[in-house]
Image 1 (cartoon, helix red, strand yellow):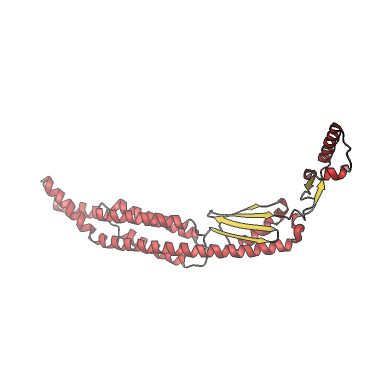
Image 2 (spheres, rainbow, N blue to C red):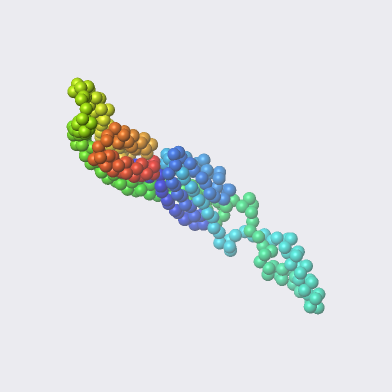
Length: 289
């Protein structure tokens, strides 16, 4: 089981690569890199997709070069402007302008870096295309390890929450056994207060109907099965995030039905506790692949 949240970084020679991901319903890759690297987008997508089936993934590529090794050319327009200014200054000061070329070259602004179109970034700085793809493979492996580590932590937390939910379910099961008697006592006490004559048979029929409508045993049984299913999914090596999300919704539905059926204060208290636990489960499940 893996988390959809992960991060890894790698620096090799003049290239720095970072990858990070957050939860998302589907797999989505965004490449942030110089234009030269976009030819690899499809191959990078396939490589990452082998390890990640869901998640919003950002891959950042930065290239840095030593100024000494960076190819440069002269900006002729700027050189002409500097030459013109030097002539004006020499005329104004009434001095000779000797060695004009060397004077102009002293102005650093006359130089500019060559465009990436003149020389591929991947071929500069002694860094080849095969080197880049090897770095991507290493980065993805580190990224996958981080997602697995995070996934184990999430699974452990969800397991604890499910165990707490099972305790609440067991309490509800005990309360459900005495629930019919509570309803009977409550109704008969109200009948006594009304001081009216009631047909005993009709009263029993109405009681049976009310008890049947308030029966929560079926929901408690389904709740137990859903908890078991979630625990089994947590131990699965496959990507089970969507299934866990579905079961989290089912858990909430069963507990909500129990709350709507029962008028018992004790049962209502347990239902509120169960809802709080399930909400935490739903939040954590959203991060599982």
